[in-house]
Structure formats: C-alpha cells, structure tokens
Length: 225
Image (cartoon, rainbow, N blue to C red; front, side, top):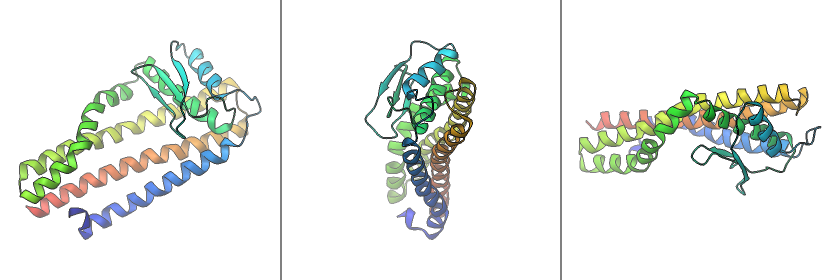
C-alpha cells in the first residue's frame, strides 16, 4: 500500500504529530478556560447576539448543540450553534464571538467564505471518492483512475486552504468586537486569544496534512509510472 512507502511515511509524520498536538492543545485550552467565568457574567449566546447586532446583522438564530466543541455557523439556515450557549466562561464567550464573526462574514459577503461555500460540494465529493479511485487505479495500473483520484482530492485540499483565511478573519473580528464591547477585561481578552489560537492550530494542521497527503499521492503515482 502506498502509505507504507518510506518516503510517504517520512513526509506525513510531521503533519500527523502537528495534528495530534493541535487536538490536544485546543481541548486542553478550551477545558481550562471553560472553568473561568468572565467578570461581566454575560452568556456566550448573549455576547454573540450583541456582536451581530452591533454589526447590523439580524435574523440569525442561536441554538445550543450537545456536541463538545461543536460550535459552528450554518450559512444555509443562518443558524449559530454553540456548545456552551448558556455559559459565561472565557472559552464559551470567545468561541461564540468567533462564530458570530462567521455570521458577519456571511452577511457582508466576505469573499473567502463565499468561495469556501462554493467549494464544499466538490470537496465533500472528492474526499469520499478520491482514495478509493486512487487505490483501485494503483491496483489495476489504470493511470486515468489514479489521476481522477488526485484531482478529486485536490478539491478537498483547496477547501482546507481556503478555510484558513476564513477562520483567521473570524477570530480577528471576535477579538476586535470583544475589545470594544467591554464584555471581557484585558486579561480575559488574552485568554480568549489563547483559546482562538489553539482552535486555529487545528485548521493549520488539517491543511498541512491534506497538502502533504496530496503530495504523497503525486509521489506514489509518479513512482508507479
């Protein structure tokens, strides 16, 4: 199997370590600051609602989700889902502000977010079929299938790369909004940045892993030829 070629293992190992560290970092940092309440004691849902209102964004529903770290903004239904909507902790408020940033991006037609949304169908399709087609192509020595697998996975890689500016921008919006709103102190803002930086690292790790997997596919395809 191509994953067991020494060069691909060496190539993917650093990204794998980064991904493991990123998951540990975001979970430990979030858990730490989920136990630290803000001085204002305003809930995450209230903060998100206020940030969107100040930006002139209305009509966005805020719901709770039972999935830990399952916070996200759904542009299709214009729904912001928070895993700790009723919490006034530093972590919950910071993440809520970040997700509100996504809602503002959507309302303002932020170009990278629109591009990411457009790439989603191709990325999902590609991530599901790329490896089966690639493996079958290698087994049957059918170069067209190998090439199709590589092209399909390229769409998934593109998605992870486009995600980076979208996430970084949402975090910048969150920090700026929290700084001007007064919902967190300067010390708490530093903790919010720590939480959002840890979360951003998971996206960096995902992009690195995807890009290196694509490079590995290209190396293996070239080797087989």
